[in-house]
Length: 596
Image (cartoon, rainbow, N blue to C red):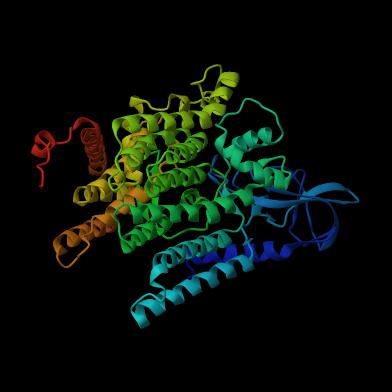
């Protein structure tokens, strides 16, 4: 008989704990039914003193219910700080001996004399069922089109239906992970600060805010609707709003941008699908102790001590951070710049939206070269003479400043200067913005943790033949990438800060493939081979990196390559838009001969 493996023992132990946690305590109405092994706490906190442990089944009178985000992750007690935490329901109960706090998420572990917290599935079967039904309908439509009719049922709506399928499948996948992770969430970092801004604005007050006002204004409807006094009262609503409404809208905007920017429907859908699903399987690996950074290929994890789950929640928008909403307004600005004609109202609408994106995250200003190129120099739209161009530039700058003016007034009132932002109160170097001394750390950190995206982008950008598309992708990705390589606090996350760039990375790879694969099969083979080699050579952990020095060298080489590419692109735009004079033909000089 084979001995039981340690992994199986752990599985059995966890199963017993989960079974016990689900059935040990039940709160119905004003009565809390506790079973043997239920710990009673002094305060609604897992770190508070355990007053006593229930020895036999009994009922308690419920006085109050409170949902608490645990300040320390109880699943990994050996970690002083972990970016994941758990939220649990605590009930204030009383009996003849006094009042206590009890939670259905904890059981008492006699051997260690401590309380164990067990993540349990939390979310609605109805929500999961709706997502599953929508995905099934989209999949059924795709199957009929591809395998039976060999053509779309509704050719005019093939692109939108394909986009809907991508969005619903991605939502279903994320909902499945959230459901299985249960009450595991990202530990709130900046969210309470954003909430403070929104709360003060909603109540007509002002204080020393530590963030810009944009994301706080987005929280105002949640604050008013929930009559919330703290961020934790609206944390779930904001997280679901970001993950299942704002982020799918970003996917749709990315598709519209790529569809318009000289990419066909199939290529745009492919790039959008890669952007939507690759973060579920590719994760950054951050080895700060070893000073090693890279990427790993892994399936999603639902363990409360998992850094892959933290990064998935971060990139997928399942949090209350500003990154997802900032990406939405940036992509909306880009999309409108592409689709609207060069008329005066465009130079009002787009700068206003873009200015609000900068109110959410001031570093979005590095997308301004892209917006300027799309409004002034993008081919395919009617050209403007110099006078019209200067007039529209003045209008755009004026509108941008008008929308941004409240933040400048707040800067002067609270921090003493128009140019001094709330980041000066953070107690770190965030207010510096960009520091050349940070590049030695930032280049390998940012580039290696997104090595697959950036390396494929670097190769693909050389193979893209469409000049305007190449210019759009370069201006989209490189300025912001450079900024965060030198951002003094980029240690906070290697992917959160650059999530707006992922559509450009995936679009470059897809756009590099020829429209007619049969005629350009060698370029196709080259791209596919490179992608496969990069994917297969990714280690599963940092300890397995055999050529880490080479990874670092490549990251610096790509940084230099991108710098040259950006300078060349900007010079090319300036040369073609402003410096080059149109050729004068003989007819322009001599006049057109009469036809009489």
